Amino acid sequence: MSIAENLHHIQSQIPENVSLVAVSKTRPVDELMQAYEAGQRVFGENKIQEMVTKWEHMPKDVQWHMIGHVQTNKVKYMAGFVALIHAVDSLKLLQEINKQAEKNQRTISCLLQIKIAKEDSKYGLNENEALDLLQHPLLNTLKNVRIVGLMGMATFTKNERQLDEEFGRLQKFYNNYKTLFNFDILSMGMSGDYPIALKHESNMIRVGSAIFGQRKYD
Ligand SMILES: *Cc1c(COP(=O)(O)O)cnc(C)c1O
Image (tube, rainbow, N blue to C red; front, side):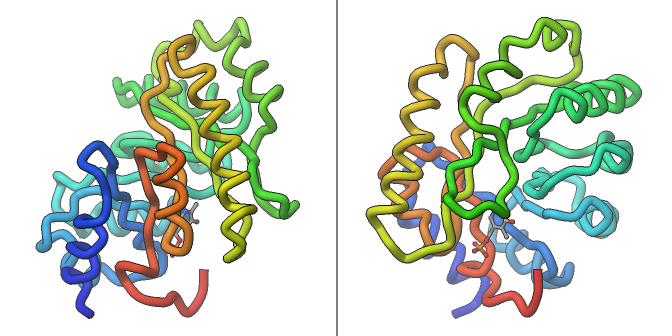
């Protein structure tokens, strides 16, 4: 199936309130343009330099989401245009995003990454660490960042019970605190597990290989 057909197929399966982030990491600009021409406007990348290069080459109405782990010293390269940063996990990173957003006279929306997978390799905060960060006294002084929700990556597995458990835990945490902290985005679900994430009220899915095909490398 073509990129356009894949996109239409996924769009037809997801509720209207759910946003689809087309994860285009490692894919060339001509493939992103095929998705763009099929109507896709939100793209996700996991490396800042690659996102900057694609931003330079793509139409300016694309919304760029940084979905990968962010190094503090690289925030400046994307601060002028990034629409949402999914994987924030420290006050230090929020302070740097705030500083660079201010320089660009912008407010940058961010999600806190919550660790839900059993695998050690995944980044993210546990629930108590997230609550500490959300209630940190310095957060109010960061006028140019806004924490608009939470993001999680489940274990890479086909075990539906485990996926249910991992997404279910983040769903519960999100619902418990969404009013208090004004959350409106719950980013969870990838090519292999988005139907399960949707059962758990995800309203933003990040899908790569189901749109563009299998990647050769990450
Ligand atoms: C690569 C990646 C995705 C998309 O993965 P697919 O399995 O290709 O859909 C989603 N989220 C993050 C954080 C990623 O790094």
